[in-house]
Length: 130
Image (cartoon, rainbow, N blue to C red; front, side, top):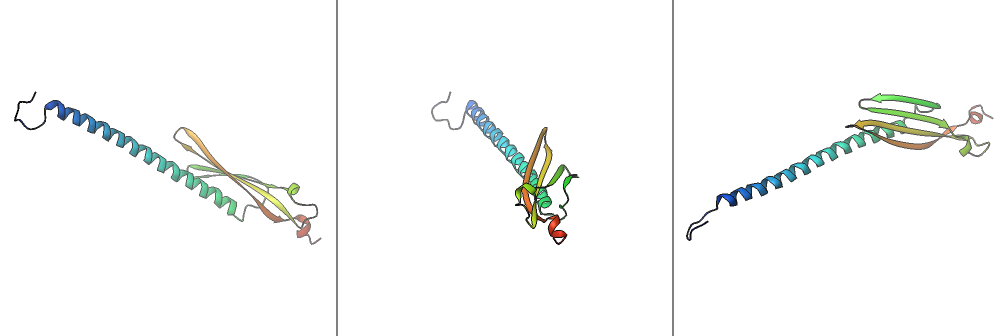
């Protein structure tokens, strides 16, 4: 206990202040870790989107079939299918459906993103001149 006229803090007051400061710093440390993991996961997702979009934009994706490619930690699978059911009969062009799936591991979890598009291609009758 304090005597009248004494200034300063008691030992118990200092220990309580340190305990409060430690709890606050531990909470800030956890928030920093969560923020760092979120930024890292967002960077990996953005890279996967870029890989998927580059496959959709590639002019070389013309033949029907499936292609798989390992690009760093990512696996990119491209599936191309001609879709004659989407074009009217006798149309000078056909549609090709392109599906791209990019997958990667994030810790113990498997993550993936899928993008699809339709591309107009010249049909066999247009190419032969009929």
